[in-house]
Length: 118
Ligand SMILES: [Cu+2]
Image (cartoon, rainbow, N blue to C red; front, side, top):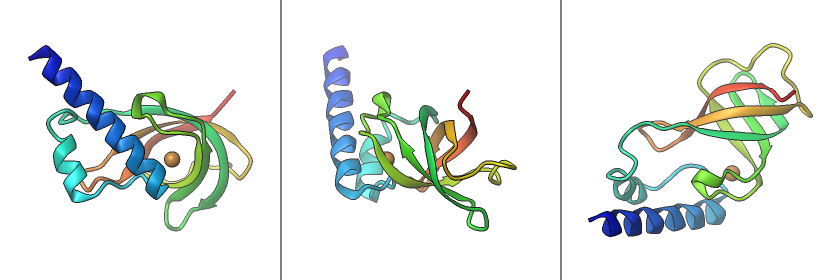
């Protein structure tokens, strides 16, 4: 049973890594989300680091050139993320940031915490 769980976890990790690289998007298809559910049923957050490339305060979105996120097997890339809360005051293009991500029930990756990297 332990082996099965490990294999399942590995194949899911590889699958999501490929999907991420292929789409340059943190959204997962319905099918992938259903597949991922048993292994990732609990909400888990993942830490990331990067540099802000663009900010859309109205849409509450931020574009980050993020470093690889090992636990999600994501390579480094520049992409847009939704924000759970408004963009923090004074945060701007060029700022180095640390952030935490969670996948919402619709499969979208949302930043739940973001702060300047010191
Ligand atoms: Cu990415």
